[in-house]
Length: 297
Image (cartoon, rainbow, N blue to C red; front, side, top):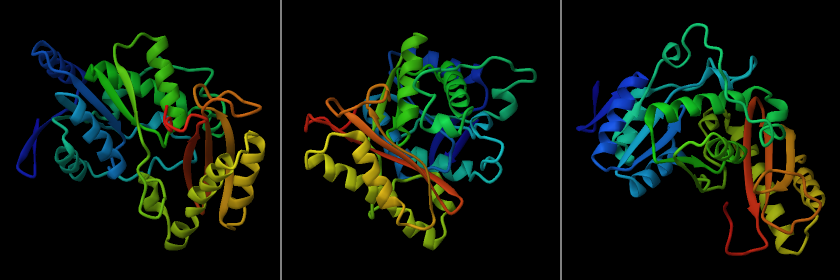
């Protein structure tokens, strides 16, 4: 199926066999393939990933699929924003050359019973309050990789735990591709871009800035020589608690490579947090590195 977007055609595939055939053809031509998995509702954060893929690969596949298996029973699956036509136009403008947009019944046929599970990096932080979330993520992303057959896949560092989980999955299951982590894209006032920002009321939007302010405090404390992760975490917590609407899920300072607990910051560490503002759960993070030249991992 071909969809016109700003007078630029983009081929949209709906089944894994069609997507695989296209990718194999491109590989036979000697082209490199980048993949940007998304759940749609594209914003500038997603578009930065598509642009990064377009800059580094000959072809870029954007996938659009709202994955039901990574939502909990009381989460926002039903109201998650969906506008495929708009997303495709944005994706093409950013450099996507094809799209994979399967239906739920294609991704999860009747009696599906196989899941991909990571049991170490995924267990804390978001995995604590969302126990089936990462099982849904690893399962759907492995299926997307098998359909798209990319050389590289691009993910944002806002979902830091997800990035590390997927890197471990690719390593342990011998996927022939590279996971590329890309910097967090923020609004001018510092709020990390997220599809869920659309849920915020005007007041909640202002209150949500407490996440970035808390991370600023962590960065400043680190620059001032504080290396105790618990002290840094408490400083961030004290700041966010000043916002009445903020309900803290977690604030943790962990090893940046594998999210293990640390007693002091000697190597790169990530300060990761999840905070619900009103009814909207938001995540954010910053990496603290003794090596000033290294801000991302």
